[in-house]
Length: 315
Image 1 (cartoon, rainbow, N blue to C red):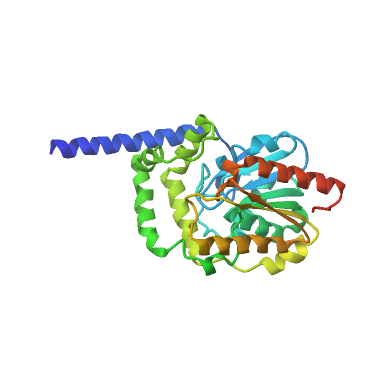
Image 2: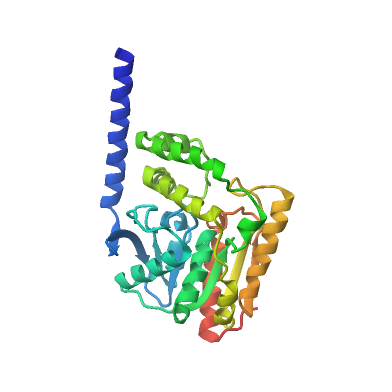
């Protein structure tokens, strides 16, 4: 009985500690309210145009920690946490690309940011940026896709399976007691992240809310994406588009040669969305290019800004 009591006290203490850590993070953050949901936002820089940074599935704004400060030197930059991710509150709505695109537009309006914008999207964030472009084409100056997801990717690989969700749910529940946070300390993310930024990232991404958000999004991913690229092409035909694709490996996507070949084909297909497109291979990066070669993204944004100022001639 004594051991059981000690375990109970320890779990309660761990849960209180997790609550305190999350509460402290929220106090230091900026928010706007969209449809009754508090959305965490971060705006830096002053020069026009404004750049929108959209994180991948389950990720949040802090993933751009090495990118946003550099872009802010020559553009205004906006990043945020989608509902349910990072420091933003959860929404009762089911997540899909159109919901995220409309939520982003409302968040920009509440933040008093007017376009047109340069859109930057990583992984699933790339699809959200393209869906935003379909819904609000007049708001788009150009797009940077960072190892972007593709509308057909779930048809050609099975790296996310329904059988994984039981484990994901258990892992998300364990966050109440700080277990994922403890485990994250043994995972090497990247040496380029400043220690304070890395600590904050681990803290935010291992909350129960964040992990539950990952489960919800992955369930949606398994269902596949609605096909909309053919609708986007006429709207982006004259817009500059830079596709940054991984050239190395990491632990986030499968390493099989079959998968690599299929992923390269999908990345190449993204180039067909615009008549003014260019591909850049991140030779030293896996899926999360913004951690390993952030300068490629910064340079791509700068190039689009310059090309738009001169008239679109991206080669």
